[in-house]
Length: 66
Image 1: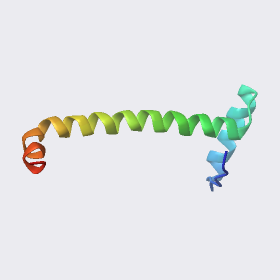
Image 2 (image 1 turned 90 degrees about the horizontal axis):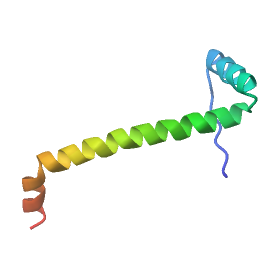
Image 3 (image 1 turned 180 degrees about the vertical axis):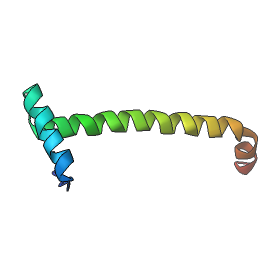
Image 4 (image 1 turned 90 degrees about the vertical axis):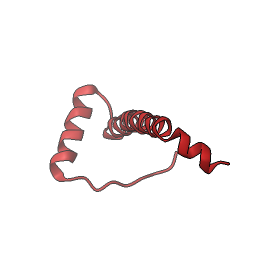
């Protein structure tokens, strides 16, 4: 695993530490889970949008591929 340093606003840092403490986890574990969740959700949104655009412009994309 590689390291990534994040500069967090003090309030966000406190909230992260409080949540981690309440859940018996480290702040790093909480942050990793949040990032994974965000990537999963946003990845799904981007895929849905890309599929919609591909369907909406299928004829143009086909002609460009000729």
